[in-house]
Image (cartoon, rainbow, N blue to C red; front, side, top):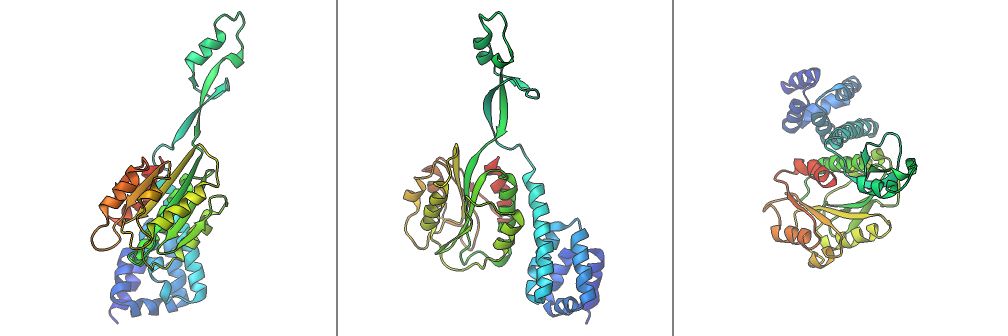
Length: 308
C-alpha cells in the first residue's frame, strides 16, 4: 500500500502534522502501523522527543480509537504530559496579578510606603524598623470558577483545546481556589473549588468528556455561584466559555447579575458564531469582560488574558 511507506517516512521525520493527514485520508494504514508493537513504541518515543508538541498531542488524541487498552493507557500518559508542558509554557507568559499589602520593614522588599512611614517617624527621636512601612506585592488570592460549554456543537478536537485551556487555568491559579464546571443541559463539577487536584488528574478527567446535549447556561451559572459561595476570598470571579445560545433553561441574564464579576469568552461552537447579545449582556450586568475569539484555538490565551 503506497500510503504505508509515506506514513513510515512521516514517523521517521517526526512530522506529526503529516501523520495526522495520513490518519484522516488512510485510517486503515495508520491502524496497521499501530498494531505493530515496535512501531507503536517508536511513535511514543517520537512524541516524547518532538518539539512539535501540539501536533504530537493532536495526533495522539486522534488515534485513540485505533489503540488497544494498554496502548491507550500509555498514549494517554504521554498526551497529558504534552498538554502540561504546553499549558505551563503558555501560563508563564505575562505578569501575574498582584495585590499591594502594607507591612513593616522586611529585607528584600523594594517599595516603601512614604506617607505611612512619615506619619510613623515624624516627631520621634529614635525611629526603628517597625516605623518603616513597605509594600509587599503578593499574588492575588482569588476564587475562580470556569464554566465550559460541552454541548453537541463542541466537536471532538475542541475538547483537546479546552483541556489545554483548563491546564493554563490550573497552572496560573496554583495556590488559589478554583473550580471547573462543564455543562450542556446538565452540569458536571470536574473540580470542586474546595478540593485540591493534581493537574494531570484534572486534564485526564477533561479528556474523558464526550460532547452532547443542548445548552443550559442558566444552570451552569447557578452552579458556578454555588462553588464561589464556598470560599471567603477578596475577589470572586466567574468565567464562562460558550457561544451564548441558551437552548434550554431560560434566560441566563438575571443569574449573571448575581456575580461580582463574570467574564464571558464567546467561542465559535457551530454555524452562526453564537448569540452576541446574550454574551455581551451577561458580561455587562456583572462588570466583566466579553472576549470574542474567532477561532477555538484562541481559548487558552483568552483564559490567560482574564487571569492576568
